[in-house]
Image (cartoon, rainbow, N blue to C red; front, top):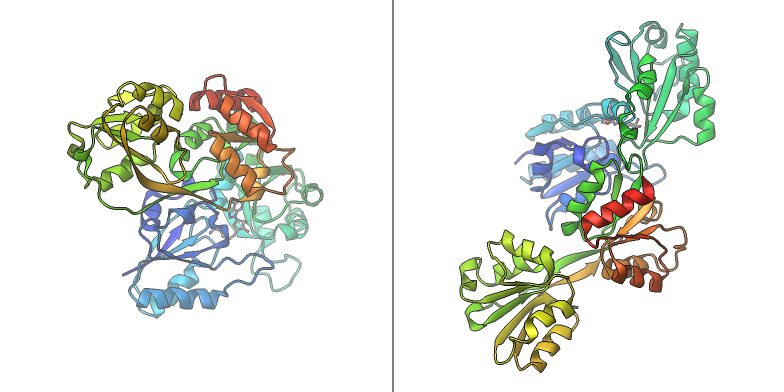
Length: 482
Ligand code: SAH
């Protein structure tokens, strides 16, 4: 087996390569970098051994030798090892040392390139690193070396004379010395500079100035690592291009609290409008194991959530034909869609995704029929009791349960808005942040039931969707934040 040194891209989990994501989803051992971000590791399969080698300042972390030894050890043991590294593995970040250690130990490895922050951070801020007429070359430099030290390996004077774009990685604290060295070497003190912190993440921030002013401006703004500094006339192009500012939710941070499995549609729509989406899943669904279901033993199978169809299919033996001749009822259109994905067209679909609506549809035809309700462990009893009261023979198949997830609270509470798609996510939110001050939260609800739950829980309702579906929710967010 091979060790894969995979570039994770600059921060946005959507910017990893297709090959990198495919490997990540098959990893047996995942060794993380501090820059890898919170979301990509969630793509690793259940049971994957996750080792956080992150070198966060002030936190005890593995030394480079320990990381190398760890990669060699798991590689030698024949495991499928993914070493996820921020940006591109071979742009700083010591990926080459890891490759050398693997090579020396005779462990086969492969390097999967990534989108480097050196290019992506300027680009995300609207700065092209090259431009016809402004910069014919770009130099990527470590800001780690103090220009004032005699042993510096970087020839700042010649970098100052070369007219192209300079991209500095690391060393935001040495900005003053570097700017001085560039000016002393002959660069115009009015050369524009942009610093991009946490590029492509929900908290990206851009600070601008020129070589004469940038160190003071950055200090006043509290600029901190990770940040990329770009120096050159191309920085001025930013205003002309301004691509990130032209979309309705540009630069706005929206937290999406849906369970991960369902979050993608909403997150994607918001991202397409320019929002930076924080996925703060507060609950996730976990299958509950159970005996095989003999679908033919029932007249009606009631499916009560979009999570249920895939799990139901497994329980009935993986073949949708087992439902042949059985009436299938779905709670709301989203559940009907999930059923279609397993090749089943529901016979009955309630308009709204609430138990009351489905009970209304089924009540008249319930008497004397054998009805199976496929649902979550913690579901309400309204449906089974209501159907039994009409004379049906009701059985319940518990397919899954929802379990709480510890969210990235700073990102969720710091968002410009938090989108709530159900009363249950509102309850999970309140539980996750019990004891925290929620007054500053700008909650946006999909509909009145969600709003009511939010108010009861002390979550401020800044807006409520006029149409109670995802399109309506997105429209309400655009109206509030756009
Ligand atoms: N291999 C990485 C760089 C590792 S060195 C790459 O190709 O991007 C670490 C430095 O990268 C940080 O100090 C910072 O300068 C830069 N960096 C990485 N991710 C960044 C991000 N999202 N925003 C700004 N700078 C980033």
